[in-house]
Length: 293
Image (tube, rainbow, N blue to C red; front, top):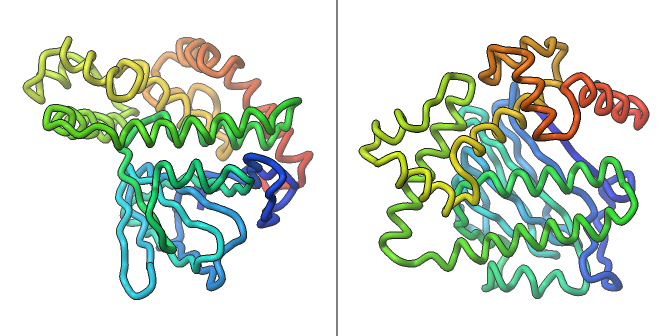
């Protein structure tokens, strides 16, 4: 299983903290590689909140005697004190992001998005690169813990919930149609990022004009399709730099860039450092913290 995690207090301490408005304990990203499934069972729940974003695949949640399915594009809330029992399966290629937090403002900000009551609450917010991006920002801030990181990760979590609230406000038929078409494009980009992708050709294949597709994609995701595709490729490259010994040129090819110099230039523009520097920093951080490489 691939795991990228960050902890505020060196470990997952399951806090029930009321003094801070928002106190993030831990955040992570999981992808199944070899395990056939992963099940999490907490009969007594936790003392803090957990919000999980399903980037791909499905998460199967048991709520009392019934099963709820959270497909890709869902946010799942597990409130404090409720039993937790959820599973996802490798054959569905799941990828999930999660964050644990507490604080005096936690109930208010979660109720605004999820409302209701119960052990499991699911909100359909759509497939968007913004959610994984914000979760990854929280993870990286927790890993490095630069000055003011507590305030910054609290803002990232609030942005996740604000984006979710906005997504739920889309009610018109036109919005729903556009949402389905753009989510189909998002899935296509995520499945084919390693191949040459031409925006105009994709739009034509879906009977859309290129201008309408670019405008609608930007409206729905907050960025044009080419920028979104670049963000996917850079995120995948970062994962490979951390978890494999492939050289820079090989990683560039895997994520869709045949020219290693161009790949390095794009990577540095997106992350602020070259692929080689990124690898040195990440491996140095993992080694110094005692994690297994």
